[in-house]
Image (cartoon, rainbow, N blue to C red):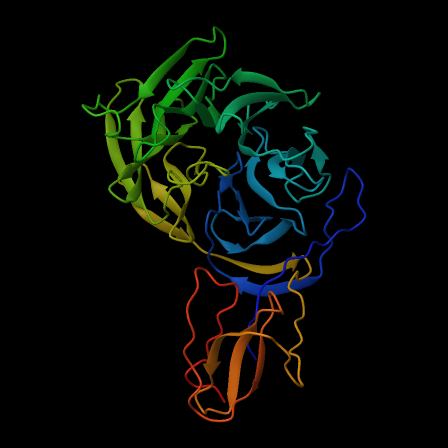
Length: 403
């Protein structure tokens, strides 16, 4: 069989404004003990970890064990975060056909939409206010290739802009996290040219009582506009309000650092076996979410495909083993069935003929058959050659071990 071309088709199903238009046509099932970009969060009582995996949401005991699915199916659900009282989980989902903020009980029951965006909406980094009445989330603006930071009251779902899309001094804002006293909102802001390598991000915080903003972590001034001497993202304040953990790029690796908010001492914590998204776009932030334990002494992180507990004192890692049974529905295959024709070949001009290794068949393109290829029996072994035109649509070649 010779692969002659590729055609695309579109699956269209009846849908209303509250369901995804595509229906599942296949399903894959497997068991895994690891995953990429799990974005774990820890319940306020420290007993339960919520995480995402292949567009589904799971919870597992904080000591490890069998992960229980709480949101599955065709929607892409991501970035789960527990409410301050632990009674709800906020997450992002496209189950209505557009990405929105949703909440549900920790077992996945009683899902409710918070926002009701329509169209091609991209959201990231959902988090709660300390009183549980507001969800912070960043929304992408394609016109500016940047994210604005929104506050969304859970009761009304009506978003308001906290940090708008700005100029080069602050063009994009993601990863908002509120302090435990409710006063501060920490986030990462992109600054300078978007073409710098790597893109420059700084850590800022906003006083929610006065709207005053200050920069906490930034790189030293560079002698070249295109040379970035440091980039910092994914800030997370500790429950006791004393520390701020954030991520940074060091060489080609992602590290976590710890800032003492009282003394402003800054130190390295640990290297993570997960690459950041600085060269891409922060559709799910620049690094996976991580969470403090209630006593502020450790972090729950996604490290090298695993869940780990990291000590704030010395960076020591403890594995949190999990096993998840996945049942992932997939849309129907869009690949068309291409039948190989048999019988005589009628063509005015033969292009790019290629003989099979055994000399019994000839692959060719006929100019009066655009976009298709035929093959026929060759009279002898010496059939080959042909001129090479610029970017031909079909250029047949035989595998060396054709039978």
